[in-house]
Structure formats: structure tokens, C-alpha cells
Length: 168
Image (cartoon, rainbow, N blue to C red):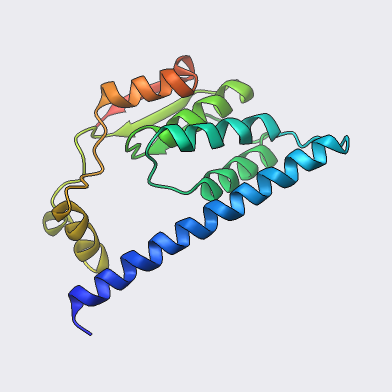
């Protein structure tokens, strides 16, 4: 198999993966909602529903399932002190989600990004990511979200006051 064909196959698998994990996330949300109807509320019900709304409204580089897993992990460890840090924020989808979590936990979210997109992978990377990101850049997908765009998405869907945006 040529490298080009292998890359196309990998992209197809990734789309399938995200499709499957998003459907699993929807089933988990339905299960949470059913539990609430049976008087068994889950502590993250409201946040999970808000995460789903953000997932639909902001282009994300992660699946809904991934963000719900992170939500559960952080809530299970809520007694660990300290703020939240996100490195690489793309369009601000996860930033908006985490900002709601930061507000609930009375913490600050630090969102670190260049806000200029991915650099040329041939200049900084080795191994598999060079081919993967080179193909994404060729398709025009720079994973770029300007600071203004990210702030606007967080303002529309999250809690802007919980965030500190760090460029670099």
C-alpha cells in the first residue's frame, strides 16, 4: 500500500472512530437523562447537556465522548487543588466546555495557544505526525482559531470570566 493510500485509510478510520464515539456519548447522555427521570440525578447532567450544545455549535477537534470522559475525570478528582490548563485550543470548543467546569469548581482556566494555527510539521516534527498534519494542512485545515474567534465562542457558549488566554 502506498503512503498516500495508507493516509486515506487512516483518515477514514478516524472519521469512523469519531462517529462511533459521538454516538456512544449520545447514548450516555440519554442514560443520564433517564436516570434523572428515575430520581437518580448525576452531578454532571447539566454540564453534559451544555457540552453537547457546545459540540453542535463550535467546530471541535475532539469528540463529544472525549470531552465527557474528561468532565467525569475532573469531577471525580475535584478535591485536587489547582487551576485548569488547556494547551492548544483550536476554535475554543473545549475551552468553552472547560470554562463552565472552571466556574462550577471556582477555578481559573488558562488557555494556551499560538492562535495562528499549526506550524509546518516538517519544521518541528518527526514520525507519523508529519504526514498526518501535512495532509491536513494541504486540505486547508490549519487548526487555526484566532484569539478573537476563540473568545467569541467562549463568550457565546461558555463562561468567559473563568478564562485567561495566553498567547505563545
